[in-house]
Image (cartoon, rainbow, N blue to C red; front, side, top):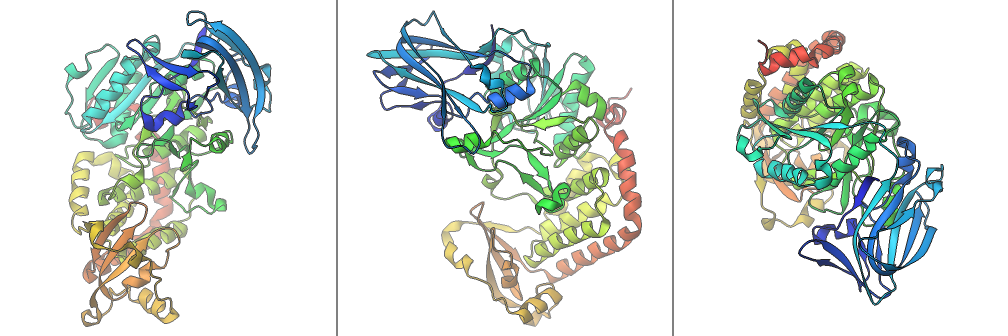
Length: 607
């Protein structure tokens, strides 16, 4: 018997609905040695849940498995039913039902999944267990097969951290305590960019701590990947962020998935919302400029499966619909050694868009598919829970997006300028000079070409960017002193005001005596695209960002706004001549930038 996946018990109340659904007469009974489900007569436990649905459609498509069955350890008299559901169908189909009397924990019952799970009509299946005796117990369960794995899988698990010691220690402890994973071949490479961890914290043969210069996420992940490649014994690699909450079952299922895989594919794990643990926040994404026909903007990231309530069966069924997305984030992303040998390591981006660029190469040069395989997922903090995005991050977003476009797309220069200018104008109209200066700096550094990344020290550059981002500090204000309703007043939309506002850069070009000392109240939310009109000829803008439920205050600095726009226009004008050369140069240099030789020098490991 080889276990494909395990039926696990919920560890905390807020995630209970992702594991099991209980009747009023059933409950978890924590014991000294194990946890059990305790039944009363005629009560039911359903496994119509995210973690315990068997997505037969995916296993039939991506693995060579032909025969799969459930093993259940029960005590008492039961009826066990097996149901199937499909995408965009409301009714469930009963595909198996049988009574079992005098079940004993040491004699597990076996339920063979009907052969129809390999048909084109396959979907999502799950168990329901009904107790017929006065009381009963369920102690453990598995999805298993008698087929031998097609290959031995060894996994290099790579995570990098910067002063998030508690998360890393918890993740490593979680993995090392899992008895099923102990039987697998794996090693955890922890790259410590902050150099705050100690070797005695990870005294285990399956863990290697690697102190590293602060080269950002891309430098940290690449250092771990480099060290794993040197050992030359891992068939697959898994990238995981440091600040995730991990259920080790996701890694166990990743092992079995690759052990029986038909072909070579990459796996993008789902991003579960750490603040609302029953919500799926993202499962793969499009990179916008490749999908203009869908109405996406250049450089934008467009997540799939956003904000799905995984306690709802309809949403569980919607996961059956596959989409050929462009990338999966490094909160949980795996690929084979063969892929890495074909495409190279990561780009030296420091942070932001490194995972996007890497995935675009996987699809473009390696020709491999990237799949989201439910329910392989981790919990991660959602972007809306971060009250304020640091301004320095904007530099890396724009610089790396432009570089990625140079390497992987045929984006025309004027289209690029249009998108950059539009974003810059919006920031200037709201007096958000911190973001504006980062955007201009990112554009400027991209136009310097690959020699810029090849020659500059990443830590020194990051220090410079941090200082530059603090030049125009905005304020984050408490919500207590404001009425949110006041922010939703519609702006005046007279055509003359709109024209004058644009011509004067929303007041930047007006004489100082025409600037009012009053404060504009604006809202940043979908459907509020004309809010910038409210800031015309005002001294301050108070912005309410609906998603983050936070207020920000920005103050007019006429000279700063004019200077930043002039600086951008100067770069844009020279770029008309240089763009095709710069784009070609980035594309040609990209192979060197992802090579072992380049990264050895970057890490200072050359002898």
